[in-house]
Length: 108
Image (cartoon, rainbow, N blue to C red; front, side, top):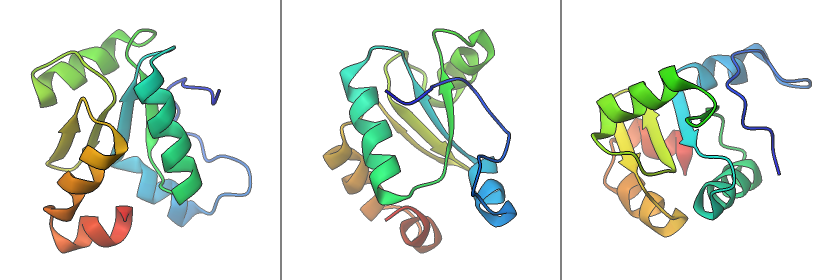
C-alpha cells in the first residue's frame, strides 16, 4: 500500500511542475480504508498528482477535510474550490465531468 503520510516534498523523478500541480490538489484518506486504497491506486495508475493526507494520523488534515466537506468520510478530494467527498472512482469521474474544463483536463 502506498505511504499515506502528508508530504509536500517532491518525490524522486518528479519535476517541479509536477510538484506545483500537487500543491493545490489534496486527497484525504484513512489508513486501511478500502475505498481510499482504490482511490490511491487509481490516482497512481492515471498519473494524477495530489498531496495525500491521512486524516487518522494528521489532525490538521482531518480538520481541513471537515471544513471543506462537512463530513468525516474518505476518500475526499480537494482542488481549489472543487471538492468530492466520500467517493468511489466512478463517483469521482462523474463529479469531475461536471467540473470546470481546467480541472477536467488536469484530472481526467
